[in-house]
Structures are given as C-alpha cells and as structure tokens.
Length: 136
Image 1: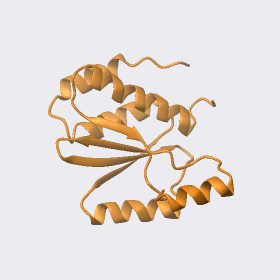
Image 2 (image 1 turned 30 degrees about the vertical axis):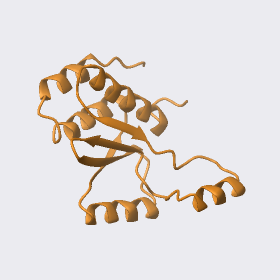
Image 3 (image 1 turned 45 degrees about the vertical axis):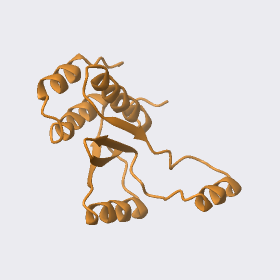
Image 4 (image 1 turned 90 degrees about the horizontal axis):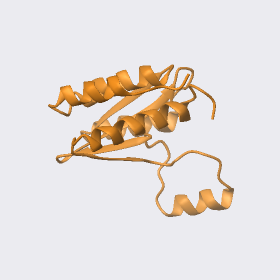
C-alpha cells in the first residue's frame, strides 16, 4: 500500500473511528466496498443485487442520524456518479462530506471536525485524535 494513498488514509480514518468507539462514543460505521477491480460477471451480479455506484466510502449512524464520508487523497477527484449520489443524498436530507487529505494526520484533523458536528463529547474526540500515531 502506497503511503498517503486514498487506501492508506482510509485505514487511518477507520482506525480513528474504532478508537472512538472503544472510548465509549456510541455509533456504528462501516465501509461501503463499491470500488475495486471486478470481473464483468461479478459486476453484473452485484448490479442485479442492488449495488449502487457512487456511494461514499463510509456510512456513520448515530441516534437516528446517518451521514456519509467520501475519502479522497489530495490528487483524487470525485467521479460523476459520486457527485450524483451525494446530490441525491443531500436532496433527501442526509449529510455528506468529502474528506480530502494529503496525509493521514490531515485526514484525522478533518474527520475530527466532521464528528464534532454530531457528537457533544469533543474532549474524547480531541483526545483520541491527538493520541493517534502515524508511521512515516
């Protein structure tokens, strides 16, 4: 895995979210595996099963609230289907965020700001964010 790639940043954000859960913040999150290389046969099967292109990387659920986070490395850009999904999600009242970062540290800072919109316990969020260690 390439340092500071979208995948690398994604793993750090997921680790941050798991640490927040371990510290008692009550929420569920999950990754939505929409990308990656698939055979035409597998892609066709997934489409028949209802897989929707453009869904953001992460879904976070808390107290009747659902929001989405699309993660991008600095040079990453949203596809048209991602832009369309985010427009539709917002139209239906769901918050969506594009978290674009050059490094895992920057991603954690931005994730911290997003989470503070939904959680009153800013002290725990800041504490966990500052305790994150990053491999150089």
